[in-house]
Structures are given as structure tokens and as C-alpha cells.
Image 1 (cartoon, each protein chain N blue to C red):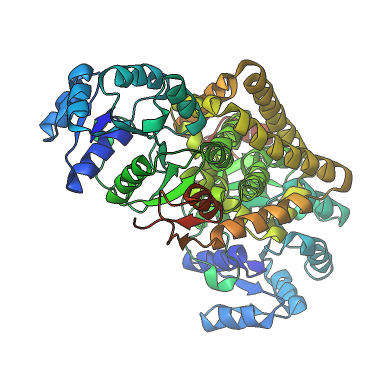
Image 2 (cartoon, chains in turn orange, cyan):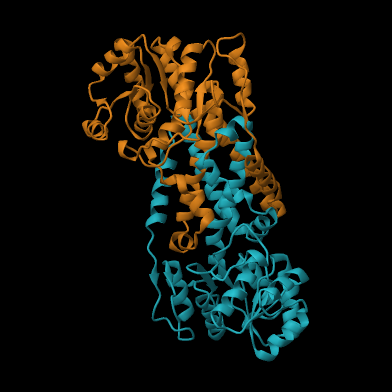
Length: 307
Length: 307
């Protein structure tokens, strides 16, 4: 397999694939990252054309692990030099990538992916073989997906130590808007409102503020790529949160009570703490109805532990 | 000194005071808490009148550590049985307590306090001698405060291992609305919006959701007491956050950008991470202008490390 982009995610993926016994090599535009990967004993190159030609001749699985703005030109290069290869990606918004893949005529070779793992740091050096261990890895399960490509992508996730959650791209994007992109917007707004209180307020800040603003420390470019790339789903989630907060404002102002929001929020957090997952078994990719069955299982909290 | 209420905060205070070499005893309404405190070697009683009569005869400092709804009747008992004693409290909203203290004619004996420490657990058994170590302890610095009482309260905070931030009650309440009460409302709204995504969304939730909803696990009764007791200041902070989020919604919808909120949020979190505190020295309680000087120092991030 061939990993394009050797940052935190791509670099960890190359390490994890080699660790799992796979044959794998990588590409990065910047020479220092490639030098660092080579110094660590990995097969890496700055020559994209050569890397893709090799992928083509070996029928490798190509993993796109570049920043979101670089996805389109990367697909253009794949279409030109390795049009026969299976393709996946690890970008955090799936419909955006799937649209570009379709625009470039590569849909039949593509199955999207999204490992729910990462840190606020970036670059080859912060990567780790174990980044995906015990993580959840979404494997795109869109209409007309090729079962062979789907299994290649799922096997990669399993080889890296993750469990697989099958989800259609739109459903994935709606879900991560709620649990990953909205948290960033709330954290940003809390950080600003806290800092507006000046040194007195920030000096009194303890755990609730520290935890509630933690992700506001993430690089703005990464946060913007996620939030702007998932605009419509994020607007829906943001609107739901705004209604809850507006209603709480009205209740607090008119009845001096915050009970509706606080009780419902406590119950929702308990639902999260007590959620149960279960192993998906008995669905065979390629068999009649497998796509719908996989999506339905994913919606109900199911995870694949093996193929 | 005499601690009324032996829950997490009061119980930790009794332990810390004894550890610091102070003479201290406590009261709790419920016999099991008193029995547990006694079993741990502390002087505790369920008889409020006897406890207060002893405080009166020994001119003890009384610390009110009862839940917010029990503050008023506790003050009534103090006014009756120990009207000569200095009084402080550890309740998280200060103007509410100060108003009740004034209504009961006890203002000249009272200086409010608020140690910024705690956990989501409650009761005598979860208390600890070290709960206040390295914490920030706000000491109420309202107009006409008695410097002797103020110093007694500040010394208690220092004896427990905290640093003292002087702040007027209204300013304290505005600050904690931003950094303690608003985080709870945002966490509740995030928990609800995430759970609305069903098992798929909750199954994909990772660090940003877990941290952003952590305080939604707090007991609703405690969250409601804080938020409802600090209604006006919380409405101001909530309105600021709502404007930020509404503006972000407009920008995301109309320009497909979240840059204004995300960049400002990142800068605000950096302000928090890089804030510098400094030691207040040279202000002597009782000297001309000391109250204004203390409040000004607190506003600028100053902390008292010794008297």
C-alpha cells in the first residue's frame, strides 16, 4: 500500500501498516518529512509520480492522508498515474472527498475512511504505531460501493488495531458535526467569553473552563478545514445547540430556572457514558443487501472486529 | 473555628484546618456524616445550637459550608446563638449570600469566600486535607468590610494551602459566570446535541466530545444552584456566547467560513494558557484605601501568598 502524506495520521498509518506486516511506502511533498521517515527506516519519497507509478504497477491500495485542500490535486495525479488502484482517505469530512472523487471519475475505485484518532500536534515526528489501536475507524459505505475495495479498506483499519464502523458519507458527516465539529465552535465561544472577563476571570478558571476550551488550542487551519468542509451538517448541529441555549436563556430570564437544559444535558451525558457497542457479524460484503445491512448496523452502534 | 456542613467542601475544610494546627469543630444535620467524621477522629456534632453556643463562647470563626438553599436558616441560627462571631462561607455565588447576610443584620461580621476547588463527588468521605492546596480562594472585598474579619478569612485560606484573590462580590459573580457557570450550560447543550445523533454519533465521539461534556455529568441540583443563584451575571455571559455563535452561524452560512470565531477563540485560549499571575504585596488591611487597592490588584491577576 501507498500512503500519500506523512503527517501525524499518514505517518502513523505507514508505521502501523509496516508493524502489521504489510508492504507499504509513502510520499510527502516536503523533503524534511521524507528524510525523517527514511531515518526511521521507512520507505518514503518526495517524487509523487514515481510513487504513484509504483503503486500502479503493484496494484497497491492508495491512502490519501494529505490536508483537505490538497485532496483534489492529489486525486488528479492518481487519475493520471495510478487509475487502476484502489483508493481510500483519512480526511474528516467524507461527502466533500466523495464528490471530488466522483468529479474525477474515480468512484468505482474509492471507499472513504475516517479513523477517529489524533492529537493536536502534527508532523511525521509525533506519529505513532499505536495511534489507531482501540480506535473507531469509519469505513464509507455509500451506494454502489465496490465490496472488494471496501474489504481492503476495512482490513487496513483492522490491521492498524481499530474497529470498523460502517457508515454512509452523509450520515458520517452529520454524526461528526455533532460530536467533533460543534465541540470546537462551543469551545471557541467559551474561550472568548472567558477571556472577556479579563485576568480576574481567567485567574479563577478551573477544570470546567480548562476542559471546555481545550480544543480551542487546536491549530485554526485544521479546525477551519473540518468546520467549513462540513458546513451544512454543522449548521444543523449548531442550530440545535442554539435553540437549546436560547430556550435556556428564556427560562432562566423569565422563570429563574435552568432545569430543562440541565436535566436533559445530564441525561444525555448519562446516555453517552452508558452506551453499549456490539460486534457486527454475519454480513458478507458483496451479498445481496450488504450495504443497507452494514449501514443499519452502524447506525445502531455496531462495530466490525474482524472480516 | 466552626464549620457548618461537612460535605466535600466543609469536610475538607475541617480536615485542612486541623492539619494546619487550628482548633476546629464541625456540625452536620445528618448523623451518618457526623459519625463518619468522628470515626476519622474529628470533633463533630448534629446539635446546631450547642455547636453555635460553643462558637459564641470561644469567639470562633464560623464557616458556612451548607448547600445554597440552607444558607438562610443557617444565618438565622447564627444570628440567634452566635451573633458575636466572625462569619464566612464557601458558597459559589457571593451576592446572593451577602444579601441574605445583610437582611439578617450580620454584615459587619461577614466576609464571603469561595475556594475554587471541588470534584463532582460529594459527602464527608470524599473530602481531603489537600483539596485546597494550590487552589485559588476568593475572599470577598466588599465596601465597608471589616479588616479584622477579612484577615481571619484570608488566613484560613492560606492555612489551607490556597492563594487569596481579593474580589468584590458582584465582580466575583460576573467572573465565575464566565468561567464556571457558562461552561456548564454549553456542556449540557453539547451533550444533548450529540445524543440526538443516536448510537452512531455517540459511538464516534472521542476527546473533544468527552471533554466538552464532562461537567454535564455533575449532579443537576448543584449545577442548578450555581446557575440559578447567579442568574443575572450568567445571562450576560450566555448572551455574549450566543452572539458569538449566532455570528459564526451567519458567517458559516453566508460565506462558508468560520474564521472569525475560530481565530478569536484560538487567541483567547492562548491568552488563558499564557496568563501570568503575580503576588500582591504592600497592601495592609485597614489602611486608607486598602479595599480599593485589593480589588484593583485582584482585577489585574494579583494573588496574596501571605498576610
